[in-house]
Length: 362
Image (cartoon, rainbow, N blue to C red; front, side):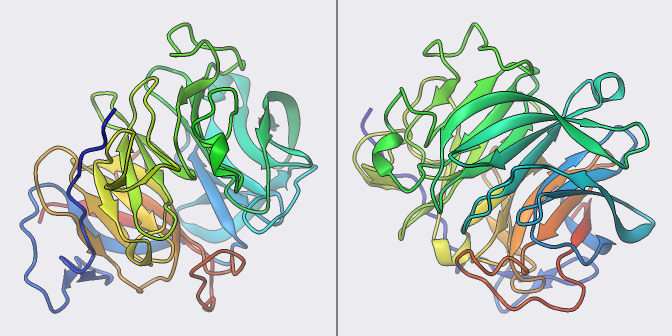
């Protein structure tokens, strides 16, 4: 497919500073936003070490993974101190690898399972963790998917259950770009499997592969109509938000953002200095994207034609994960204790944190 040129939005268009109430413009005329916008910000948890994945439990609390420690902590409103659930064995720490994404089973109340993306030696794998009834211990129940190549960088690592009941997995190219278009490789892909690890009948290639041509997918989210979105870290020119389609090729390494040949065009392209995206979430008519190097939270209007808007620029440092909470707020993790990855900033007292951001009408 010929790659056509999308709109490449720059953070220079609109920059809004963060604050503890509704953010206000910072030296620019604000865009007209028709959906929900950030309001009050509060801290759910502090003093976390390299938080990466986050998943909500049925009781409204959340589990957070520690990339370097391999630990899983429970965090909840009303108690700023994270509660240790347990440590995942066999985690292999590299510059970007470790214990990465988490996704609670849709049937957690009965099966007590949380899925985890784990860097081991010599592969990345997805495992099912069994969480104790009292939330004070865990064990590895089984390996659900293995054989995702590993390297020092570009692990991907995001997990998310879709409205179809399947587990979606974002992987990286393991610093080997040729893996991305190769349908026989699990790297540089978005994967889609059933909770037991089997392959959905409607997967496009009869394998776990759902889409190809990705460099490093660290964000997956779903709109209310079931549309799947993925955030992808680019090389030097453009980061991407893509709309996922079965069997589609997203162009890497032949294309990046709006440039190059081949592949599906991204819905949005952003400069790495203003984005370097990790987690994404859908809420209030937009996809919200956490920025690492960009140190900001992007609102990307995927359906209403609004202009992308950045919030909290440099207010909280690097942002890793954003997740929609059961009450409609956004929970966002900072990533300032993770100095190994690009765009690191000095951690601050209380880092790293889980922030709760209320959404309100503009």
